Image 1 (cartoon, protein in one colour):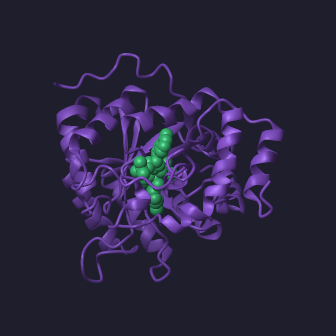
Image 2 (cartoon, rainbow, N blue to C red):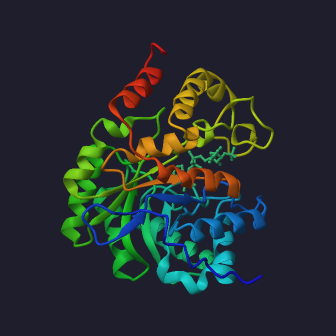
Length: 333
Ligand SMILES: NC(=O)c1ccc[n+]([C@@H]2O[C@H](COP(=O)([O-])OP(=O)(O)OC[C@H]3O[C@@H](n4cnc5c(N)ncnc54)[C@H](OP(=O)(O)O)[C@@H]3O)[C@@H](O)[C@H]2O)c1
């Protein structure tokens, strides 16, 4: 069936301005790290992407290496773009990144101009796009002058292959330097993409302040701690869950089990707020004014719908925040 986007797609989503730019992003964006690779079910991915767009998720986040195999999430996007989303290009914000290992040899990872620009060309080809909206340096490269890495992002914009630039996981000082270089080049840094969730609060130690000072937006990845801050693991580790994966493992059963006592207490707090734990975890990252968007993953349409319903109850009172801190602190409440 040809895809016709829902007429009501702009009725329930909130759109937040990205730093001091003219661009807005949905408060919740969809990441393609997992669930859209060559190993995954295409029709499930299609259903998730369609439902997301129908519910106002105008931003899909990709990277050169997403899959597996690396590159295949972009290939999946290319197929779905051609078949479903092509008429909606001007309603979509598509991002990609380069930084992690992508091809053999010295030019297949990190932050050289050689790697970044070649990778962007390859990403555009896989996705069947003329340009991406945001092109990121996926990680800081300690061995390449930052001027070279930022110069490559600036070139991508000047060549018309990207509209905006972004950086991911740069620390506060690296972020300040990157922002200064890009400003001097005349291509301001649009956005930073760091990890942020209840179990990983590093951005609170300086990064969010730098982003506010510099007028840079912030899209936080893994707000659900890869599924831990949901009901996914409350009854054990399901066979199809991320913590059961044997390939490309970024979430270990040991970690899940270690965090489970806290997750159970957080789940009780979410029940009191009359929302799911996933919804509370998303609302919790969005409570920071510097955070533009929560970048979630979803392996089913149901998960996606559950997570997007976080927008119905975003505010916290002081007592709720204190209770969450208490659970997260060493002395578990
Ligand atoms: N810049 C970077 O270096 C970087 C690094 C990592 C991620 N990212 C970006 O951030 C995106 C999101 O990362 P993430 O997938 O780790 O995010 P996440 O939202 O923390 O975790 C998503 C996982 O949580 C589970 N889940 C999601 N919604 C749920 C719900 N409502 N109820 C129960 N379980 C639910 C699913 O796990 P199951 O699969 O087990 O069902 C899903 O795959 C990525 O796709 C990527 O775009 C960027």
